[in-house]
Image 1 (tube, one colour):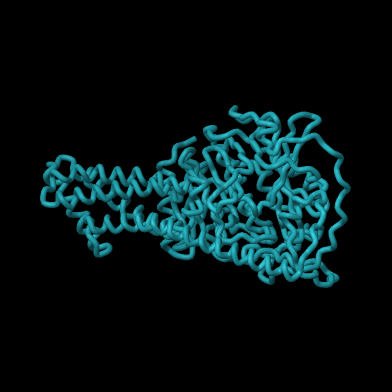
Image 2 (image 1 turned 180 degrees about the horizontal axis):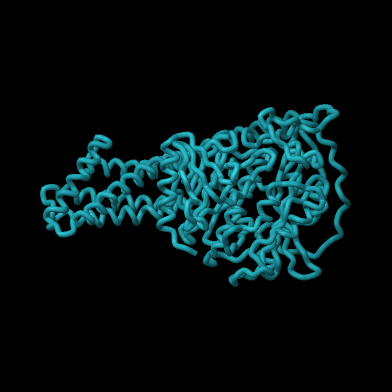
Amino acid sequence: MNLLEIAPHTEDIGASLIKFIKPVPAHSVNLATVVSELFSISASLRILANFQASAIHRPRFILINDDLQLVYASLRHTLRDIYDALNRMTAAARGLDVSQSYPQTWSLLWDFFFYQSGEKIDVASMARMRQAISDLRAIQDQRYNDSIANQQRQQQQQQQQQQRRQQQHPVPPAPQMPGAYFSAAEQHPEPPPPPPVPDTRRPRTPDLRRRSKNARGFPEMEQRGSWERQRPSSGAAAAPPPPPPPPPAPPQPPMSPSFSEESPISSYTGPDSPATRTVSSSSSSSLNEENGVRHWSIRAFGMQLNSSTSLIQTGDITKCFGPIMSGVKEHLAQEYYSLFHLEFPGKPQLTMLFYQRAEDHRTRIVCRVRSSKRRTVYSTIPITSLQIYRSGSCLQLCQKGPDPDEMIAWANLQFSSIEKMVVFFCTFLALRGQDSSKPISNIPDYHLCGEFEVFAGKIVDDNFAHALRVFRDHETKAVRLQATVLDGDLKRVPVWTAFVHPYFRKKSWLRRTGPKTVYLSELQRITFIDSEEYIPPRTRDGKHVLTFTTDGDATGFVYYMEDLMRHTPVR
């Protein structure tokens, strides 16, 4: 939903209707009012777009997002109908007098909207749409204020309950131990664990019929259930007691509280080369496979993508703002295994490392900055504590600040291609969604800013119900498909994505073979789920199958894809 892209279209329609005022004097008052309403709608859209793009105000925007989607879709269809009528007028009016073409077109528009919905294209219909958008802006503030008041009441109740418990059962303060920054984020008072069971592997759900041939060799991966239906349970088996804490580290000289102040990282604006790419994961993929770690994220970053669409370098340089921590590697080695690492070019060198815990798929992100051969510093944070947003050619990893509507940047990552940015964005959402240590539902950051949602429909994908969307990036004009979980706790968590603009000039790439079925001759899917739990539907000769749940969705998908294929420039 790109509000800034539809706002100029609204203004264009208004400017086109201004030309009707003089040739159609009988409806001049009505026309002038419709034009005024269209420009008011455009102004409201731009205001809401500022809320959508702002990391500070985005929590407010999320409260009205679903309702705004409905108004947005209605406005798009209305504008498209008016555009089509104006185009037909231009084609049919060649050789006709203006006094004939304009009244005739206005009459056709009037009748069209009346027979379609019982409403005429008059001041009332446009005023209702403008009022709906204005009401959403007011509801946004009201819902936000109500949510803040509820949070404050809940915090007060929790503080009162905690004070009563402390008065009844005072607890002596515990000494601060090395690595306390982990316990503060991960450990909470819990009842005693149940007695250990002989088999710690949790059986798969019955509807998961397929298993890879090599799955037996990796028992830690067999614990994962069908994440499309529910997250892996974090209490299925008793975990062994944690090992004793490591001995205190030797004293070190004082260091800066953040990487950006201690070691400012130079920006990288040059083109990619085989030796230095913005994101590099080949070494991590081979290393983890050799150590017996199998995970979909390794394949996602190890793929050779069929396109690389450059981004204009904007925004801040790659840097990490997290606090410098000691003992990070030692602590992670006790419970976590390494998934992959991504190297970002520049000096000092910054590397993002991803670690996961097998028992509950808890993921931690580690930022490593190597300023010299002798100096390397680390910072780490659970992935469930972060939200991800796009700013130009950067992805910003943010955590909530002291104020509910405040977002504090933990890292800023610069990308040189839209493909690498999308892979990182979707991987982040999928890893966070599959983390059952601190489940997150109703994710607020599922939309990649700068992309316009062209189409959305429902498909049956390997016997699962998924939402299929078509996105077009405003800057690069890159087009991609994305399938996400349709409903439940993991709603909008990505299952796969695929860039399709490289195929737009290939004959017979897209073919509708049935009322609900569409074949794609080529499709490079980047999947964000284990291969044993998802097999892409394909025909015997290798064509990719999209099975929609309704004829209308299949028709809409083909219509919008063919429109994109006609208007997307060749690269």
